[in-house]
Length: 594
Image (cartoon, rainbow, N blue to C red):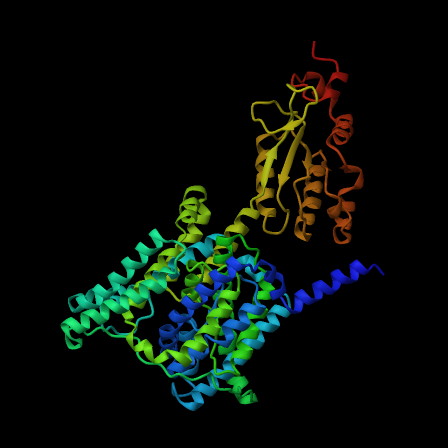
């Protein structure tokens, strides 16, 4: 056996088990430095976010940090995306809370045990879907869905930070309009000192990014915002400024844990596990698709499923609850200049170090400064170029994008994605169910007389030539039938019909039955159905062979010229003698009318 073949086979086998070998050659000194800075930035941002997400999920604060450590590293090593960062998210935390709060008291040991068990079950389902090659589901999320969802999610990220940016104490909200309504109702309670910290952070980030685009502007902005808060507090006093900070965090490593996969737990958590799995994968893949579109990467959906599954399986043994692709951290990762998955690995590693070394110092990081940074992240996620392009070029894609965008703002996130996918499928089915049906005639202006679609050129009074561009399947049969009937009604003397089938890629049973029925109708009307240039794969398909035999192999031709020669021989020559069109070369054999 060829050694080179063996080596290639071995190489493919290694890449399948160790997918990080595919992107490792992309690592250079330049990308390593960029990933290091992006990872450090992401780890700093993950500190307050982890606490917030854990609170939303009904878990102790430190569990939000644990979910951003090991799972992020595993997902980066075994996933497909170069820039996706996994960890706890707002949406996943909400789903977890709504699923488990009916079974146990949030924050209780039983609740934590159920959360870890649910995480393990979600990971196993994700892994199974990846191994079963269900990654093709990614293809049903169109680019317009991704653009609309990303823009909507960016606004949700920004709106969720309004209360921190303005120093407001607001009730917890789940939707964009609820957040805006709450901010408007409490506008007179805005803390100007807190807002000043947020504005200083936001402005400093914009200035640094403008002047020194390669500098880690987000870290600089956070430091400037923190110093601004300290200065204001020292001048005016903490009781006056009331600038809230993230607060000191526990400096502990994630303790080992074990999911409790009893039959009882599996039975009561299965519905929640399935729903959480579908949502988590949709969220992760949507973010990965969005970032892949920005970088030109080809995403492997199957590998991404596997990476997400392994991250949750491993995370459940390190006190991490359900992790998925994070909009905040992935967007920040991209904006911070990450180049390879090393950035996500560094982020997970740095988060561990930060929790051990400087977690108590988070007490000096103002929430308003974090809000300013996330405003920058949200702005960078909105793809204005493609939004404008879609709005200009395609009405159907614009409808899909706008509906997904609005659903993201005002409905549940998982429903927004599903709505976009369903709309994409509806638009696709609508297009495929209306294949183009073109009248074709020889062009006498060219010596070779190629077939063209030109309504100004004359047609044969006895023969109708039609080309179908599209699949002839159950969804398209009605449209084809109606169009051909309309053509027949407009020209009832054209009893003979020739279908040019080189544009038909697929014919199902209903399409084949339609052709058989059409042939019988034409024969009953005194004419015949002819088919030419049908693709070999369709002709040789054993399931359709019987239908083609019913039509008659004598009426199926390989070329148009051969078909016309055979058809012309049986046309009514009395009509031909009176005809002045003379569009076929064979028409010369009939004496012109005197």
